[in-house]
Image (cartoon, rainbow, N blue to C red; front, side, top):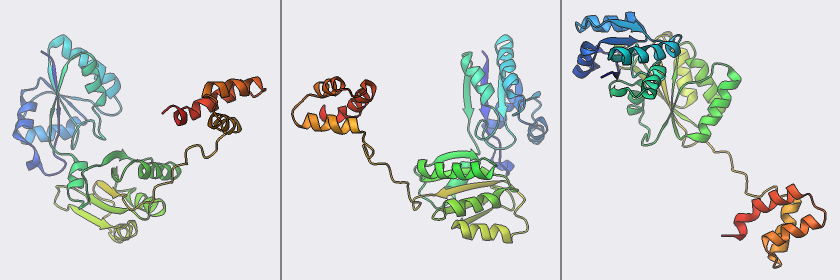
Length: 286
């Protein structure tokens, strides 16, 4: 019976790879890899000779459909991998998983490393609830809008960033969310693993002073508990004239329907009156 395994790979230290993950790749009929050269080296270390095929961000839409059909036709077991970490989490793989699910092919995870979870675990923040946003927009305007959106939606946020843009990202955080606290991890599980913690200003200063900042991959955890939330608009703050008239008439004893009919008969616009009545319905029918 055709089956897909979603296999997490090491994000740096090869010893983090589980025996089950290695055995899954060894017993699969085919490995669908983000980069066959990267997964090929991993297989070589573990003596795995399973054939590989590429399934990356530039071909995964068509390749996912193709592989799923091939799995059904030939009753294949396929192992899906990315270069580092868990497939489908800011990495390719979604299209193949989706194609398999749509065709009733069993999909099973083989869990392992995930940079976002590793970064959360060493942040020192209250991470009982968090939101993951992956890579943020590159354009400055879009990036700042996204940061404001994140601050409205989450109190702990996790994002990825490349070493070539991490300084610009912390600068944008400093300007948009200066009250945030940051935990910025680089090269997790590798020899020169490092985590910077502090305010956006402190972290940005350390990044700028480090001549090796543009090396390694970054995972940032933002603690947004102290970031002011935009005040919600008060309900009915801009109540329409029709709504004010209906509310006054109902408080004088008319039913909501009668008040609506009377205003319409007196020449008020039917649609505006109807919308005003709908907006006020919850006040008088609780």
